[in-house]
Image (cartoon, rainbow, N blue to C red):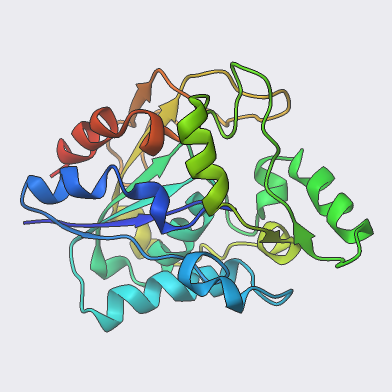
Length: 241
């Protein structure tokens, strides 16, 4: 039995994994899918001081408090920064990192560095009444939809779980200063559906930090593949263990 820890991205909460969790559990694995501070059952904790370090602490806390080991740590979108930071905090607890259509930072970078168009969201939030709230990306005409989701029923379900992000989450730099993290195997899953203009993805280096060839898989769908292609995503995850 392996342990999968699924970390949602910006604006989402743990409900986005509801179609994936039972498929992984049916294969005999333990699955943990927490909501980060400010989302889902922790929505009341959202405030201007919530940032990348907060969310890193969230995930480290789940792993250490439950004494989880050999964890397959999956980070979607913004959570690529979160799982990278976690890997440098507690590398001995992790068996695999999975970057699911995710930001892949270098040491000292923020989300705004990884995807520069994010700076426009920061500037808009700073001009807003709150000065720090970053609202979810709006739904766009097909094929972009809402985070790549276009089915009307799925869009309504997704919209009901979305909530504001914070400027601090997008500005706080990630600290990647523990060489032991390089030994962790990692896999990248890229969603190849239509991407809104300005949303870029860095190429994956051909060699992983641990010296093995890069592992890159693709899914023919939009950004929120856990909603649009849960069976196919689950099959890719199960192939790692």
